[in-house]
Length: 87
Image (cartoon, rainbow, N blue to C red):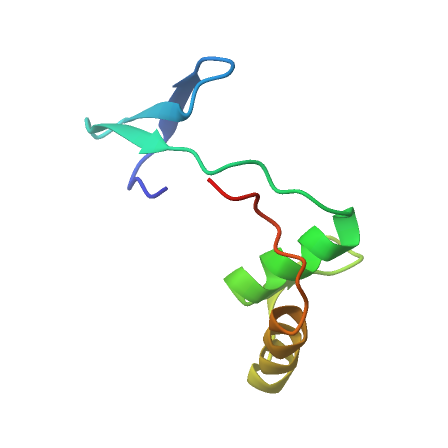
């Protein structure tokens, strides 16, 4: 989800959409993905693989280097544990 200015967001429980309104005017509707499933460490690895970033123990967001990112992605793709349930 990308807006160029501060954003307000609204959603309804049990809905599959979220509405965002940016300070610069655009109102957007977004389709939500199914909730991730699995253990927290596994989901954390998938987030790292998808974003190319990791959160350090000190709370600092940093880029993963290319070799580490490649190893992580290859290891995850070799498993049958996908973080999202089929839509």
